[in-house]
Length: 238
Image (cartoon, rainbow, N blue to C red):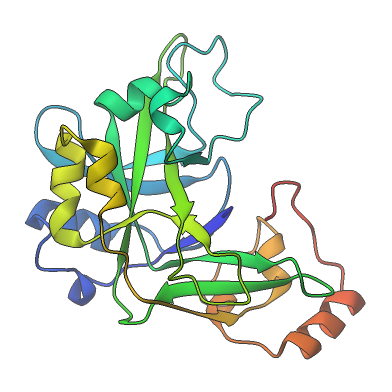
């Protein structure tokens, strides 16, 4: 995944969320095309209680010489993160949850490739398990995050069954607090039922960010419109 949506309404907040977090999510700006190196709201605890803050998507480790990395760090494979040089310390000490309405995923088997939007069948919010880090070798300091991914048979075909590790709202605080057997905690987590539908290839442009991106499209008509237009293709598009 390279794009997701954060557009929350106050009445949609799960009751399991702490009031201060629910209020922060409801007040956050709506974002319909969160892309690599863009800002997004994450739920975390820096030591003074859980809260919601805006971080950059694409984790930059604290030991990096520069506020960037040559590696793709928007996602981290669940089975590799605990041993990864980039993700090992965040896995142990800096965990977060990334709330979202859903995310975009491409069907690469289609000709041309077709983007889909994946969301919970219930229509409720999703919470992806994530990791964060704090880079502060220079000014300005940088807070950034990655989303944990794994094989997920709940993702409907024709899409590849692989995506974020989701948490129910009432388990978000447990994950952030740092369960002792973290891997078992996540691998045994029941994943929500998901659904998907085709959306416009306009999501390829990092500059397009409005609710129309969530509207269902006819794949054939969208392919024809895309071929006739001047869509901008982002190098991080996936």
